[in-house]
Length: 151
Image 1 (tube, rainbow, N blue to C red):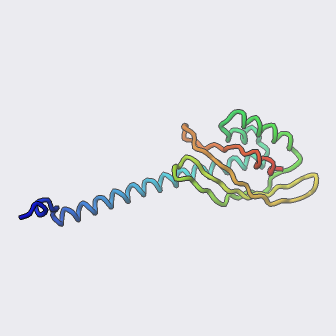
Image 2 (cartoon, rainbow, N blue to C red; image 1 turned 135 degrees about the horizontal axis):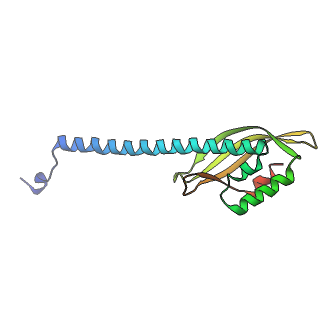
């Protein structure tokens, strides 16, 4: 008997070990998928809430979706300056892409922008970045370029 023969793992044990490792890998993957699904659902609800607040001009509610106080102030001032000049019509979230780290996401939203003084209806696509904070809540990252698209 050689040294190699004395260190061989019995076949039934090796097969059981492979099945166990594959099962653990699948369980980890399933846990990750469930966590991502929960994050996606929570984010979807927040995005809907943000756009609802914008559409019905609940500006105090809209700014609460931003974590940074300076960004809240900038959004507040911008929304007040545009009040009555443009309104948001129908809104549809059409894609949410959560990063692999489950801490950041890109959300794509299509909405109707009604420019009241020109009687124009524009179809706009917004790309937003959202981040998961330590309090386990998603917050919108303010993009000044996207602000100008709000009317």
